[in-house]
Image (tube, one colour):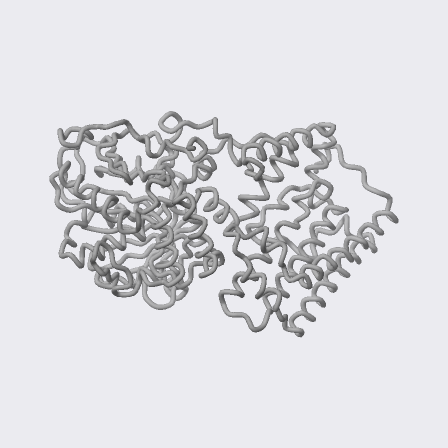
Length: 602
């Protein structure tokens, strides 16, 4: 709080000292209780797959290294004593040196109210000491396989994050200040927001992250002009209107993930990758996946290949007259692109794709990062049983899983904003897209989880058969560009690096700064993040590759364009969508498939 704000009254020093001592003792008691309870309750409540019995049993048998535990306890008490001494000696209020600081990227305590040199500064540092103690103790667990260790550490972090003082009204100085200023109106509004979210979720808390009424596709989001020129059960194919008089001879197809909607690549004109690609003179086609219901329960990964990019390539060739296309795959769309290239290689049709671009795409799933926490045989069986009832996995289940990977940013920040501060949901295009989740057909999702995540067969020769054709990623000779992002929590860059090394043909690997979304959707005008490039193939140790790579400033987009122009062909007259009689304009972009929201379906 700054000096011009009304501060919450603080107790006299004897009362303050007693409160501090009580908090100090209770902070370790909470940590020890957590360790002794073996996490049974919190595991069940946090596991979005509702199948954490195996994890709970393993946690119940957790054995912590006594030496490491003793050291963790010693560090905790040493830090606690140092913190207490600052208070007792009267140096706390005037000291700029902290006993412990938040980790880099932890924005929960960015408000100056937490650096008041008094009670809230003490609460913050006490919490950080206690959470470090819990994390260090569980990290020392003995007798665990790698999978169980990852689960223990992940769910421990969830518990620690949930217990942060920022999440409670009486220990968050900003909430207290807001309550004083509004005479408690923020808490009344927050309670109303809570009731609204409970009603919207039919008794299940569905925290509203964004004002969903503030955006309309084609009106103030997903604005690039284009037309749907082809559709089937799974896709609408959008062809975008040219912005240049001439265009590259070779068309460009974008395969987005069907786990989300395509318009993450076309949020606003200033950050639209689609608009930028059109501006570079590409004839851009984008697949817009259907938001499936129970009627598509039997659609598998094979269908997504045949009715997705293969059907799109046939339509694009008929529209443009070009037998070959450059193809970009984003996230899961990149995994499908790898399947497409291997399939075409096996069927003798590799020339149908001139080049492949992979944006944060997993091919080798041996190290899937935090997402692997949710995937073991028991959890997959549980999901399959759940999907068998409706024929799909509901988008909210996937959203919960992804949100848990960044719980402080995507769960607790909204609890604070909506329920404690009593604020209305934000008006933010990225959050609108994030809340616009899609379903996954039961058969496809089961095949995806088992083949890729659970068994990691996708990367093996013949590990997956599609339309009767065994595919082999290592046979692909198509020139490829791999873009990964340094802070990706969905497709960890070291894993995508390993996947890029599987291909037989030439591969350019580029590592962007930032994460899964911002590192990709990074227009040159923003001048953000930077990237690393190297002439070396992505083989061997990923960190060794980065150590030798050259750091560049700004966006990776121009680097890609410089690479892609080699496969773009000569310049031809710009192509207008709907010009071919056999492929007329069916409806304007973004199309009806993208416009269907889950909350509008029965």
